[in-house]
Image 1 (tube, helix red, strand yellow):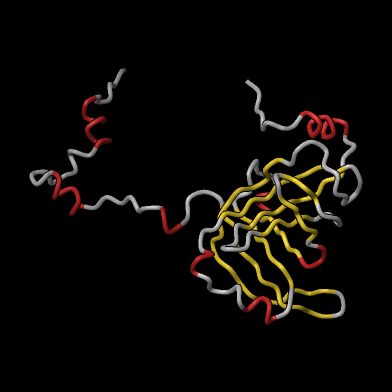
Image 2: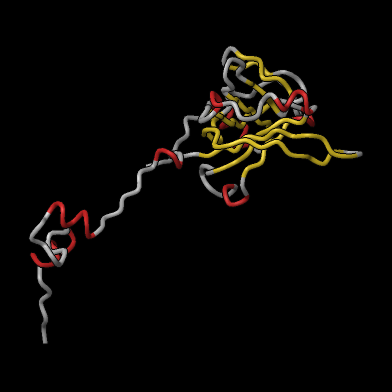
Length: 196
């Protein structure tokens, strides 16, 4: 059985040949104003959207432990700008858990806009937090707004599965030694056989 990602045949051919130029496409489903950005120097048309160049003002960092994984577990995306522009982005309740998608695209020229085949997903996640900080640029620092991106279930959605003595007494009032837990029941139903 082969592992497939559903790559467009032209994309696959370019990857196999080693003759390709990668760019990243980032979609942030920001409330009322979705963002479609790219690391290319010119706009890219794909899926009925124009993916605008982010230039030196765009940020994308994938956690180093995620670089070798099939799907990175966390990353951050952001923009650099003025404090007036970025301050309005902080603490928006409607931006919690928004979708963030990162695609790898191949183009015909370095940082160009003509796609080879279709981009494919590199990471699909959700916004787990935001931060306003400073980023070093040539000649100084500028304010930067970043979104933490996570994959998998959010911390707020995962339930704790703990079992206590009180839980056991409520379900089995007569049990004083955890005799009714599944693993104990299984062990008692198949006692070990000692051979000499």
